[in-house]
Length: 542
Image (cartoon, rainbow, N blue to C red; front, side, top):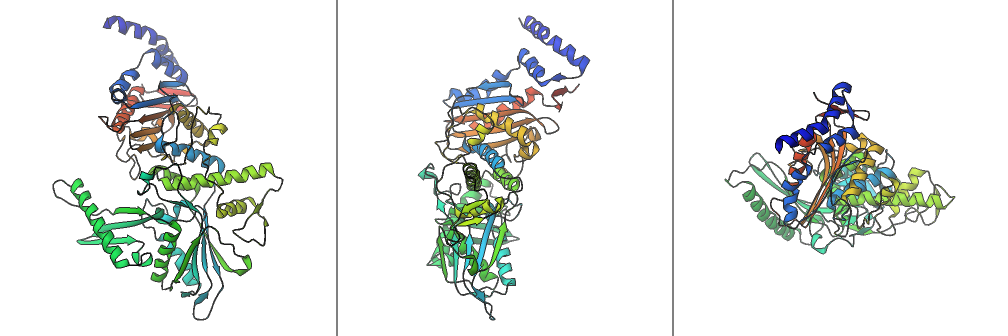
């Protein structure tokens, strides 16, 4: 039987092999067709990896396609399932479609009044939020040193000659928590309050680090600036933090060998991120020898007539794609929400222009109620709308599927980041989104995704064997593991898209994450990705 089966396989493959020998290449379609006829063990790979956890009750959906949309392998690909953070791929595509390539977020610091000869500012400092997610970080850093931009602002004020603020520090912006988020998630760092004006990822954080033999502990911002009893607050947080650190060190070092050089953070979501920003800024002002005001308050809007403003300081974020890349690497939910909201607001601006002949004008009470119509260029109009806030939270990223003419397939949208358990998507739609996004933006899109084993990403400890052959976005929540991305050739060009969703897998063994990685590693090997692409042809090694 084995000899006969081998004869049948060779008989099926011989014509294509002869063509390969004489032409040196075959089309992608022919190559996939050849592999289908040769019956590669895709089903066997599935049975030995994902199939095992499916038998234990997990729901599994898989879609693997060539870049021209031909199905290579699928399993329940039209089943609607929780996509978890792989949904951030759709959010990113939405942002790239709506926002210009040179887009930067803007935060405005308005200084009112005047400065006298003693360096006293007789006026207010008003910080208008613009949904900038990057205010937590130093440029090109990964969740470190949140003071960088606040120090820049304080230095600017010091150079203006300000030494004391005889007025108020005011934070302006809207705050909310998506109704679709589970209450049980809200105490944790991955579900902070969403705010038009925020800082330090909207978290009060505890940091511990070691220099030489000296141990350091710091609360950010210092309780002196936000607690009625800072001494008690410091002791309470330090006790909780030290207990958690002991647990971390015991888990990480069973033999008692402790190397504590890396910063550890235990953050707590701030109740009001606007107040958190002001508390942090007060701390930096004092350290810059500027006596911060006793009066601080936050509000959704604060109209100021332009004539009363002494000077405007504008802070601009890193470019859009840098922000998107950090978001995709870290899978930060707050950043995804702020990016998605920005795209929603910009999309609303586009719709207004389509419905009205008053292009480049805007109703804005955040700048001045006395000037209801401001004639602005498009960039200024977008910033004014972002500063004005939004009327309601209604994630609109699914519109990008319409733009790419991808069938809806009953997709349900409840947030931007994928944390809501009301979100539903299919692996079929995800694969089509990946194909369309690459064809639309090429390497600009592909470079947003980490490769297998990439440090400081969610793939840091995953898929290091195929490594650069896989570019992907992961997604995980309780009982849910997902992964979606590309299988690449040896030059880093996509050959295939893959989407794998696993739901209801809290108690399966081996774990859903291990099963997904094992499936992709075996699949990559069978597809023999040691090929290159020229035009629409696949060149096989040998």
